[in-house]
Length: 137
Image (cartoon, rainbow, N blue to C red):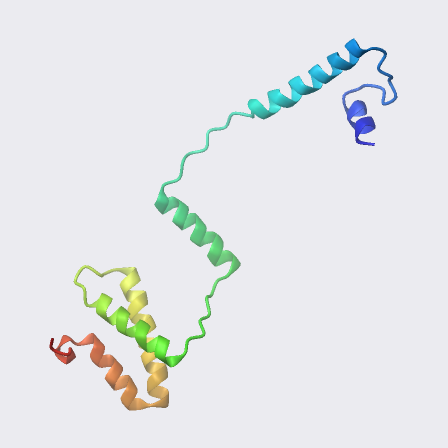
């Protein structure tokens, strides 16, 4: 079936018999020439190489369109550890900008959730932002 369709697409009669080995070789050579011409010389269009930042931004756009929210199920122990690590990172003087704002908001949300169950726990967790409450070495 595919042979008949391809022959018709080339304007040949689908039932044209091959009369000799030379004709078979010629048709094979023509077919291979067309195939390799298309494969080895694809249409030339120059794609600009993306920087890492551009690739990240493009990937994030696609991710946000497909999955706008990431929902996490954390046990309280893991949540406390993540908040502690973020509090430590947020105290670094060079950690400023949008990512630090998101990290602080994450910590605040976890702390408010803990406070809603146990008010003293929220107060204790907020101490992690204050270096005065660090344990001396």
